[in-house]
Length: 401
Image (cartoon, rainbow, N blue to C red):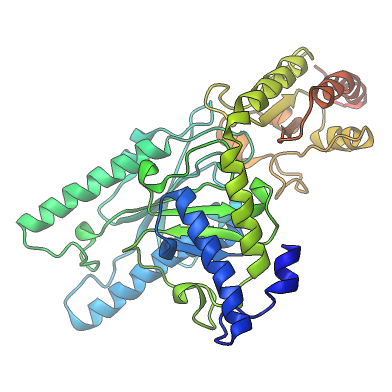
C-alpha cells in the first residue's frame, strides 16, 4: 500500500497516464478478488466496508424493485399496492438489521425476522416457511460476528434457487415474463449473505454457496480499514445509494481508494493461502474454552460444533461484562463485550437475547477472538488471570449466586 500511494497516486477514473496506471492496480485487484470468489471481475463492487456493502445490497434490491414497479404501474395495470417482502434473521449484524428496520419504518417493505435455535443457528426450513408471494430478498449472515455460529448458507441458497426455478417454470406455462415485477408471484427471490466473518475459515465460492450478493470487509482478514466488497451476480438490479460519478459500474460514486483496494486484494490472497492453519487455531480456541469453563457458573454461547474456529463467546453468571473487559485490559488482554460495534451499549446483546440467554448471564458475556499470531502462552495467560477477575467481580456484585 505504501508503494502504491507513492507510485500510483493518480485518480483511477482519469484518462491521463497517471490515472490509467492507478486503474491497472484497481483492475488487477478486482481480478484477484474475483478468482477467490469464483466470480467475474465485473461482479465485484468496491465499497467502504461491510456496512456499506450490506446497505447497497438490501436497499439496492428493495428500492430498485420498487422503482421498477412504479415504472411498470404507470404504463400497465399493475399492482400499485405491491410491497416487497424481505426475510432476515434476529441475529444479523446491525448493518443488516437496522437497514431492514429503516425500510420497514419508511413503509417501503414488510419484513420477517427468523429466530435462531438455542444453538444460534438458523434452520433452512424456517426460511422456507417465511417465504411469501411478494418475497424479493433473503439476507442471512454466513458467520455470526458475536457468537461465531455458522449458518447453512449453501443449503438456504440451494433452496431459494429451487423455488426460483419452480416460479420460472410456472411462468413459462402461464406465458408470464419471469421479470414482470409488478406481478408479485413472478418476482425472483435474491439471496444475500453478510460474509464478513467468513474469509480464511470458510468457502467463499459464490456458486458453491448459491448466493446472489455477498458482503466482505477488508479489516476482518488483515486488510486495511475502510474498504470492502459487494459481490453482485450478473442480472441482479440494484439502485445506487451514493450519487455522484459513474464509478463501480455506476453503483458506487466516489474516487477509488486505490491503495486500500490493492491492500484488500493482497490480504484476501494471503488468508486464502493460510487455510491450512485453521486447525491449529481451532485447537487453541478449544484450549481456551476448556480452561475458562473450569470457572464455576460459566457457559459458552452458541453451537460448539457449528462455530468459527477463532471465536469464544463465554458468559460468567453475576459478573458484569464491561468490568471484565476493563480488568482484562489492565492485564494486557484485549476482549470485547458482544460485538465491537455495540460494546459501548449497556443493553444486552440482541444475539444472546435471540438465543434465549437470560440477562444475568448475557450481562456477563465477553467475546475473545484468536488470530494467526495467537500463541499458547497468550491463551494460558487468559486462563490464568480470568478466575481471579471473576471472583473479585462476584464479590462486588449486588446479585447473589
